[in-house]
Amino acid sequence: MKRIPTGIKELDKMIQGGFPEKSAILIAGGPGTGKTVFAAQFIYSGATKYKEKGVFVTFEETAESFKNNMLTLGWNFDALQKNHQVEILDLLSLKESDKMEIALNDVIEAVRAMEARRLVIDSITALTVAFKEMAEVRVLISVLQKILRTVGCTTVLTTEIPWGSNRLGAGIEEFLCDGIILLEMIPRKNLLRRRLIVLKMRGTELDLKYYQYNISKNGIEILPYPEVEE
Image (cartoon, rainbow, N blue to C red; front, side, top):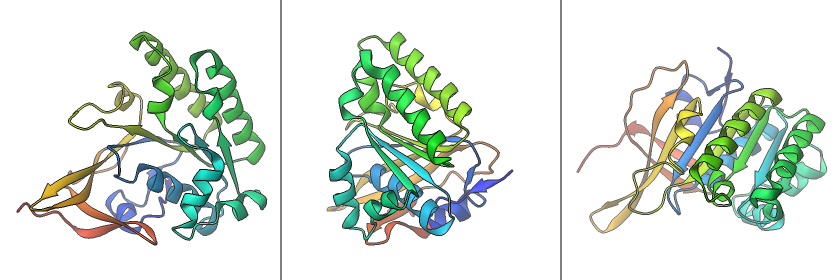
């Protein structure tokens, strides 16, 4: 199975070299866990280290806000966009239910025009809130999954976990993805620590251990040993 490196060194070691090619990976976590940073690192590393073009779709913030935030990590997405290595789609205005078909078509066109190999959708939560009925959410995610298979990218999708909830997003995304990585903020004494666990990854032997991680000027960095309970 061909692997697509994530750009996060220790994570790639944990999952046998990276995400399975053309898979859809769900990154789930609460506020402040670094879901957008994770997704951006996947696209940025693809363009700068592995010569793989990428499309970053944001339903959460404007493209300019995203690019400015990423500059704090030293990631110049504006330059990558001007060099046609990355495309950033700002679809904030198209996340209403009656505009969803337009939004998804824009994603397909961007991927094909770029001949992209990597795709990020940030976030599924922002898409699903436009729908009042769970049946509509199921249809949306099912259609989205078929589209992802059609474009043939390795895709990262982010989803929000509300504080105090054990459910991933709308509660059905996990059944439609090839992999799931859970990001958490856990209280330890008087501190909040970030940790992650790979819950699912197609064709990959998992150790199912928690690993502590930090968000630094280099993005997400995972400590190379499992978390020890205190």
